[in-house]
Every structure is written in structure tokens, then in C-alpha cells.
Image (cartoon, rainbow, N blue to C red; front, side):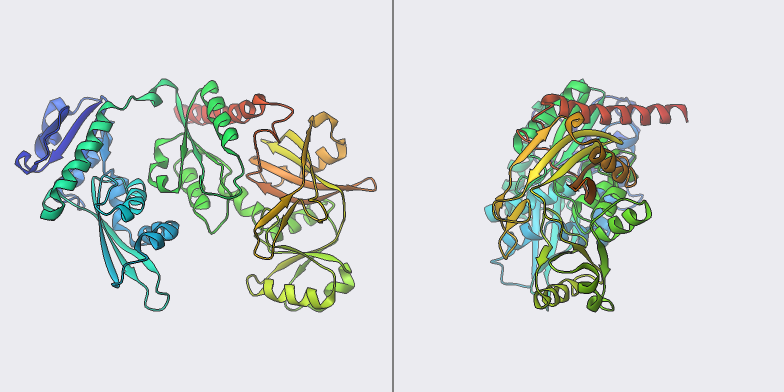
Length: 493
């Protein structure tokens, strides 16, 4: 790949680097040798990237020529938007707190040089900001909240060479040389296959929907069907436009970066699993309860509880019963209550968080069925057994920490009861055409839908016990078919 560093005046460039060409901005914009479509990385270090300034046009025309500008026009615009800065700061809050925890002032300015900072304790934050806002040199300003005492990202802006403090010059030179050398020598593996697939993961998640071995199998299957598969993290938000498809493999939530990733990817025309509508619908048990009633899907006797009907709950459902926070997942936010006193206490606590709570009659079984459904078709069937001495598959302590889990047993789909599979497909198909795990109970010849989960577990050694590698290939083939169909549609428009 050809590497260009574009500056207002080549005399500004004090970091000579082998294999890197230094070019004046006006020459890059006008000289024919820079208008050809080829593999070119453009490091834009112009003094101003303001709208319609020369630096702005460098990134704009680089994009039009098929070059790879840093920063891109999208990154330049994102850095100007205080709302996006606020969202980025929220997504990185844990990293921000860890990095700035020992800072005593109420304002802190962080200088970032190709994802690095002079202080080791700020390296993780610097790298996270660089991945969200890929720009050679950045300056991020943080403010401490007067009431909360927590740090927030107030603004982020690009730095020109002239903005580098004299005391930072040697470090900036080292960071620049390291980045450009890596960028120059890195092989371009992604050009080998027609499409690019991003798999969103969180390596620090305690209970991810796929274990490490499963993620490796997803990547291998992606490559076999024709994708360049890459694991990405929340810091890669700004890179979504580089891909053709997004596969979310971390626990989703509406007030969470996974939902923003899905929305952004869908807006950019990517194939997304799970899509924003699926996340919205599956994340809220009020929606699922209403859907089940409207579509005549059998569920345990259910009541949508609010402050005006709490007193009717025992008469309608009896005790024990199960209370569910609308946006609960993985058995968190789900409580079984056996006495009126316990019921009133738990309902009050839940209604403090949500205006509506789901209550269901307690239906005891030794196991729940989980039917995996993709694109309206059954994919796998599992029996999830209750944890020893517990009424749920997952046993948690009072703080919500997982203590124990029941065993899982995967069976061929055709061996699962027909009525269980049919109920699962009916429920899933009324949610969408994404990837779902439908939980059901079979009691006395009747099948009850418990919930529909987006982003269901696929762990190596469990859900793939019957199909093996074929499970991952089927999921990736669905992705590939959808991407192909979308590209054909664009081509015929």
C-alpha cells in the first residue's frame, strides 16, 4: 500500500519515515499522479480540517478516489458533534474512570498520538479514543461533573503538527514512526474475499453468548463461505462502514452500545444480525407478552403489572409466581416470590425501575427447551436443565453473580417434539427473520412459550454438539446469501 502524509507545507513534516511520501495538500488535490484509483493510505495532517478548508477537501477527495484517508470525513464530522462525543464517553465510561481516577483537577486534557499517550496509565483510554475516532493526533478534553464527581468526555478534536507541545515531540515522533511502519508492512488480507464481516464481541464480558472457541469457529466458517471475518469491539464504532455485514456476539441491550452498533450498521446498508428491531422486541418482555396474546401463542398465565393493579396479582396468578423486569436477560432481573410480603417488596423495587413489570404463574419443569431459529428455520434444539436445587437454569446470588448452571443437552431438531418446534417457529417469525433462541416449557401435552431471545448462546461444546462445524457454516451461509442479495439489488437499481 502506498502511504502518503499530506500537510500544508512539506517543511512542516519533521518525522521522516522510510516508505512514506510527504506531499503538499494542494499538490495532492490537483496533481494527476494522485487521482488514480489504487491502494493509498492518506494521513491527513493539514492545519485545519474545518468545513470547506483545504484539509477537509483532502479527506473528501481521498474518499472519492477510493483512497483510505485518516481521518475520514465521517470521523471529522463525528468529532464536531458534541452528542456523539457524549455517547462515546458513555460507552467508554469504565475506561475513563479507571484512567482518570487519580486525577485531582476538574478538567483533564489528553493528547493522543496514533492511539498512544505518554503516560502508561492513559494508554488504554488513548487507544480506545483512537479506535472510535481514527485520526493521527487527537486532543480529548474531560470535565468532572459537579454533582456526580464522574468524568465525562466534553470534546475531542484533531491536532495538527503545530499543536504538538514541545515536550511531546519526541514521543509523537516515535508513535508516528511505529504506526506508519506497521501500516506500511501490514499485509492486506481482507482483499482475498469478496465481502467483509464484523463480529462484535466484548473480551471482558463475564457471560458472553459465544465462548472463544465458538468465535474461532465463526471466523473460520466466515472465511469458508467467502467473508473476511474480523472480531471488533465497541471502540471500533467508527469503522462499521468498512464492512458488509455485522454479527453481534455480545449481550445486547437497548440502552447499550450493541444497539447503537446495530442501528448504525443498518443505516449504512449492512446486513445485521441481530437487527435493531429484533433487539428492541426481544429485550422487552412487555412486547413479548402482548405479541403472544395477539398471536394466540400459549404462555403461562401472565399479567402486566403496574401500580394500579398490584393488589389483583395474587388473585389472578396465585403464589408462587415469577416477576420479570421487562429488559432482563440471562435470568437476571427475574424473581420467584412465594409470599405476599415478598411479592410486595419485589414489585415495589421493580416498579421503581420500570412503569410496567411482567408477572407469570410459576410452571415448574426439570428443563426448558431452547430452539435456535435463523431466518425462519429451526437450527438447533437444546434441553437446558435447571441448576441443582434451583428453579432456574442459572443460579445467581443476591448481587446477580452467577453461582451455578444446569447442564445442557443438544438433540437433533427432528428429535424435538413437533409441537415444541412449531411453537418456537411461530413465536420467532412474529419477531422477525433474525437469529433467535426461543425458550419453551412442555407440560401435560401443552407447550408454553417463555420468551424469545435475540443473540442466543452458541458455545462450542454445547449448542453445536449435534451439527458441529456445520452449525457455524449454516449461520455464515445465511449471512452470505443476504449480502449477495443486497448487492444484487443495488446493482439492479
